[in-house]
Image 1 (tube, rainbow, N blue to C red):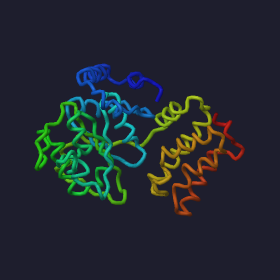
Image 2 (spheres, one colour; image 1 turned 90 degrees about the horizontal axis):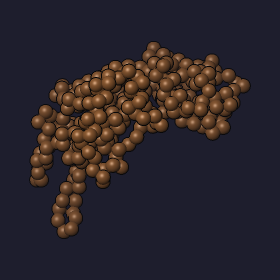
Image 3 (cartoon, one colour; image 1 turned 60 degrees about the vertical axis):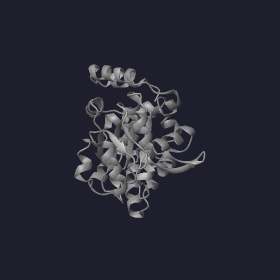
Image 4 (cartoon, rainbow, N blue to C red; image 1 turned 45 degrees about the vertical axis):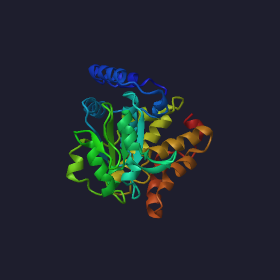
Length: 306
């Protein structure tokens, strides 16, 4: 993302007072030199004034935020943008069946002839005032959920048995993300949800998608990008109506396909790799291919887009 992040949100009409408060937050909490490598500039800007303001105001007031919604609604993009604009080191924690308390907090290790704690990402985030991005939080098993209860509690304290009780850094925040209906997911319990401010992410809109693609590919031709945006929205509509699954509804896949088109690959071949082949059901793949046929003319080559 080449554009300055504050300019991006100023152009979207985000509250000037909010942006000023974020600047003051950045100035108040300096990032230690050894953690500056964790300041990760997002590749894609987030487009959505209302959603951004809701999340940013909550974080400023010390709340943690849970971003929920279907696939490809920009949850991780928003989380990355928030960590960057607030100027905080980010810690990405992806939950799965093997994520337990020792993964998050740390585990014993032998160093310099003594047993010490090898710290985990939740511990480091809490101590150094980072933004912890809790990806697919509804896949967390009970052992990991118990850690989250303590970390997200209003007392902002982690008590580590056998070691010490640590207080969370004033700048530490946690942003959870969750998709509906993925294999291995479950309902979040009431105690965990109560520790978040919850934002339901809306489906991507035409203007938003077009802005994302044109920002990512500033040299692209608008007419060609409009057709790809239309293709994505057509697939999104079919997914919402349960005509197809959400597997081909993959913005990362679409962007990857456009990159290969920019390199010279035929658009249909690129879209086949980045979108169509994300489905492994032959009947569904035929439906997706029919949608592609209506949007991508056979005579197109890479010059139609670049």
